[in-house]
Amino acid sequence: MTELLTFATEQEALSHLDTLGGYINPEAVSRLRGAASHEVAVGPVHAGVIEPGHFRFQCMGEDVYNLQIFLGYQHRGVEDEIVKAQNESRRIALAETCAGDTSIAAATAYSEIMEAAFPSQYKKPDGNARRIRTLLLELERIANHVGDLGALAGDVAFLQTAAFCGRIRGEYLNMTALLCGNRFGRNAIIPGGTRVNLTDEKIASLKEWIKRVRPELDRALGLMFEAPTVCDRFDGTGTVPREIAIQKGLVGVARRASVELKGDVMSRAIVRRTEIDEAHAIVLDILNGATPPECKEAEKSNSTPPFTVAAKVNAWRGELVHAAAFTKEGNLIGYKIVDPSAHNWQGLAWALRGEQISNFPICNKSFNLSYCGTDR
Image (cartoon, rainbow, N blue to C red; front, side):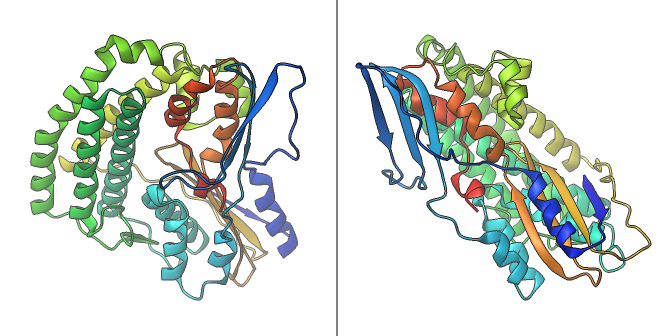
């Protein structure tokens, strides 16, 4: 879905980008008072490959009373770099690598912006292009949800599902590589269409691949969701009530879990499993010849004042928004990215209230928010 608005001046067009919102770090540390209170500071340097972020737990004994989250340790200025890029290939590459696990959704958002802003330059994506875009988006969704469910299993030492999902995630990434030559879908989606084709040979291969892998995935997930030890850790842990999810503006998995279910770790895991099933249904429909409906196009005014275009894509974490500001001559003067994670960090902080600090890993993993997508 795209939205195009016109403005009287370039400054007004740029100012509109600032209204899109995003995660804002707390201005200062709020201390917990009391003789028995203590704080646990984690990060910004973490073990392994996790990106930098600072978590300050304010506790009484093992119980967390408040969690403050600080990001911004690895700001790269991606939005400014997109504006300064000299060619479209560079701009798409920057958008795709802002958050690498959401490359396909990012390229789709950028492409929809350009298609809405310059309809005479970029043709409307045809049915085949829409099929490929949707297919890649759903494979990205499945791969990431499978990886997250496997990581959740690992955090509660349920190694059967953790091991299987680690391998099966690779299967879906390799399906993406079959379509476009790399496992993260980069360089596949461009304004006006795609750089790749969905041939009969690829369709047949993907059908056979899914037919083989899907039962293995169902068995691996079934083991986890039926295990009493897993259910004991997931049920009732890290709950974000429905009213809080709505008030804080949570999106995607986090919002569905609170609005449709109980809002705990188990709910977020169930939503991921549900979205895997929904994505498989869409993938198989496409492989059987179905064509996704056309996106609602933004209508451009006949006048030529500065304007902004915003595109919203249903990425695997939730709604991903890209927006661009243009001069009346069509020159890009501003770009803004709002990752779904920007809305959900406050949900993670809320989920830890009243929890024992030892439950942070599974709460954190049940959200699996993007540091780099927020810290652009």
